[in-house]
Image (cartoon, rainbow, N blue to C red):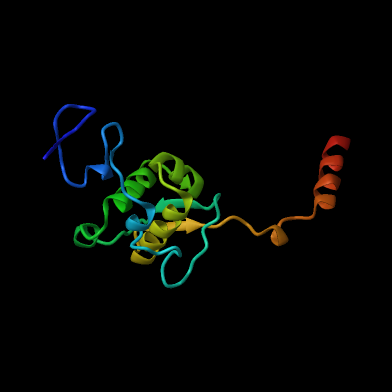
Length: 138
């Protein structure tokens, strides 16, 4: 064993993957099993899509198969409904990783996702202006 120059203690094989302040360093591709797309259905999660824990989630046996990052996202969603961007920030994970993990949770039935309204389905700005002008005239 070699001496660790920073702490004076023995250096363990593989210690380049450990940071004293941050703990173990795991690359994003390791958290997702090398996947870059969320599940076989390739669901696309917008940053503002809202994620909530499903009312009837699978049992504890299925939950025991989840990784620590999956459980972390579930815990954040149980506290309150969160957007994909908020989950990424709160879990301190890259958005791409969160999207892949959410795809797993969605397909397993642990969470529900409400997607934002597409811009094409939003009311026309001209109509909204007319409504505002009408309300002001009252």
